[in-house]
Length: 177
Image (cartoon, rainbow, N blue to C red; front, side, top):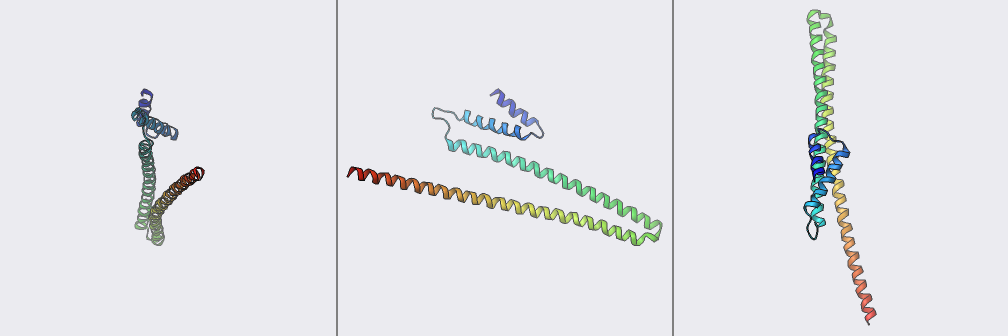
């Protein structure tokens, strides 16, 4: 248990563990479930499976949160950069027009282009959100299809098992008669 608690402590101290460290942590956590659930009979597979599923779900959710935060930070940095450069451009050309009115049309075109860039960034963010939502829905549909397929396989296995059982009973009856 010492090595296990040390590994858990190390993982919590790390800001961004590697995939190998995360995998090691999950293996140790699952081992802990088995050891804590040990009895004369042992832990039932369904119990272990539900514990493992919840632990893996938590790990995946944490990873997705980290990725989403990283993407948000990147988008925020891009918006700040574009917004700042737009403000500086508009400010510079506004000052140039106030000093010399000959640059009025050029300044207007540059300000319009800067506004267009900001609009394009806003459109990109909207498109990214829509694509992300679509991907999430598609992933959910795939998981639903997998669950349906799994249910169908279980039903087929049960039917085959019942059919095999009936055939064995018939064979036994034929041998007996």
